[in-house]
Length: 419
Image 1 (tube, helix red, strand yellow):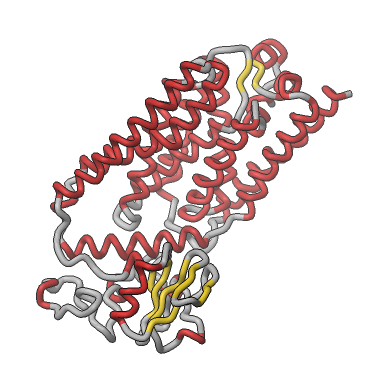
Image 2 (image 1 turned 90 degrees about the vertical axis):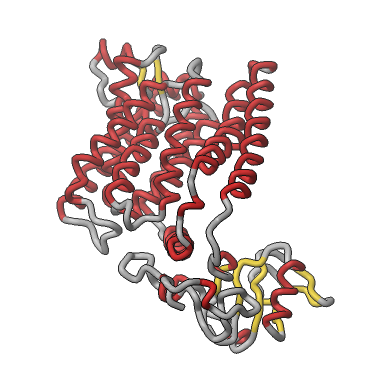
């Protein structure tokens, strides 16, 4: 199917504009980009080849037959397949007799007309109202029970602020102005990019998150307060005693269980995007540099005698990615940069609401450090290069050596505190 041809000119079959014997999205796969590979779609299992079917995302029972998660439920015809889908709680992929790849449900059929703005905004408005209610309820509980205010704020952020900001941004989009070919191009680009990104793994990132968890276990064994005194950013010890190593060690430590859980998830989600889009080699560089810029901002502008956490490095990854997605905005799906901008706004609101126990100076220092580093590296950054440049590998090795030395220093100080 020619993506520039008028959709009404295509004879409609059981799947709308996707006629039998054709793969409507094949010409729209962005083969010039790293994720433009048809093999990102799973191959059809041998037992399902040459027939219709749907792969279920959870256990299902159809016509008395039980199917486990990931199994293909067969169908005798296109019409039977369409009738089967509503009976499956979650169908992830579809099988067609003329195509040897599993087709994601999201690519079942192309757009055939422009999106209706009124219906689009009505759906976004409903999500906005629900998110507003959740945010208000969570913050109200935090106000009523001050001992649980941090937990309430985290709940308000995850289940209230993120969908609140997302639905507001969605409502503001003039999606109705996009022509049908562009809607279909974006649909295909998004699905292939999503699959490519989910398939990317960074052992370096997993080791880093695991190291932070191990350090937190060591902190718990010694006692969280004594461990923070021993190796985190205790500002008097830096200024008066010259313990500048604390600018780095504090980024590998955390203050409580929710802190490490929230930061661990955030670092994993942002870190894997940095590793995929730019290079795993630069991940350690970005994290180390922005932990330091966040610590310096906290040291001179932040409140309190001590600060702890990887937030500076995490916000640094966020700022760095904003620069990267700006540079490659023509290639990357638009949702990625939009999500990053929304996350930046949510973090700002989160910091304002939780200013009593959040080091906003460290957040801002890490975020601005990430933007600065992105601007410096921007002329040399390539999109998902097959291998890192020699200079990037050298910087990576140096950064990892510093982080490893920081972890060893934390272990030594915790051992001394426990002795």
